[in-house]
Length: 357
Image 1 (tube, helix red, strand yellow):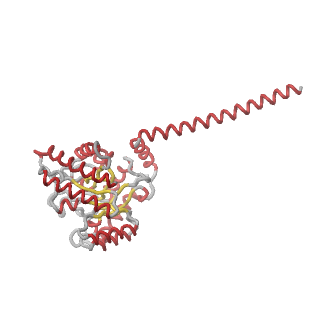
Image 2: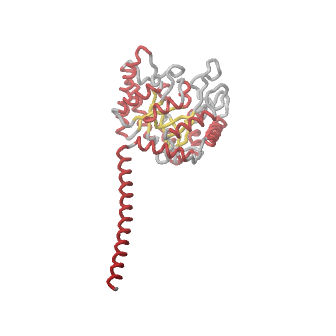
Image 3: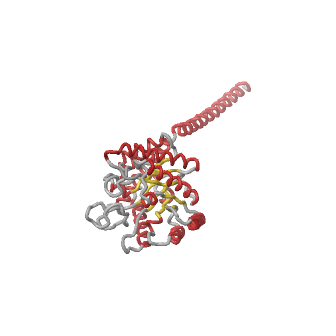
């Protein structure tokens, strides 16, 4: 009888041991699965991450500053104001996480601007487009001497970006002609690769802003299809190259936000929120960046809401590495610059509020 009882106890003990081992096996299988998932995501890289971010973004809508560094283009926001007063005003406004600045002729003024930016703990973004436009420089100039001058100025812009604390330097393509388009493409590639290689040694990202190709600025880059081709070509040589997409340039290039963002998605590192009048004969026609809601203009709350919706669908709502989302809006005539900037913030707030959950 005692033997039978002992046998049952041993059987019960064996059952408990089997149950325990079963639980351990399940735990190990789950752990192995998690490790495999981490390994695969690391191996596949950005495409996997982007798809994951797209799924997550469809489910979540928090505060916009969680996903973007909301900024403004300083010289457009306050075109008539002293540059240091303008920077101080923007830096004091905690709505802004980033500020776009351009070339300073005065080194002392540049140092003062850098100090304000550091103290405000705001992200500076350096733009060389105004320098290229002001000096009539063309990075895709068919004249090698003039192209080299543009290249030299852009390399100098990299150094100024570093002085101001920026991790990037933005540029643009230049004018082109249909009969020499391929030659211009190769000249731009030569300039961009050279500048990227110079910037890479300094730890700086080079960003090309996409403009219109036949309306106002008439730059080589240009249509989204050509921008994608160009970015892919430069990326063969330089990993520190990306594109900047501007809402207003989408409409001045006769394209749609969905098409442009999908076509350029692998290369985009930042966005401009902007407006344009594209009806010929209307006041402020062209690449003039009027306020949202300007008469006969293309972009307002609904267009900005759609733009944000597409960014979410395409995986740009990313907390870990929020990209730039800056206003590039300029007062027209005697419009009050602070009123216009306040209107930009209201437009974005409303568009964000209307964004579907």
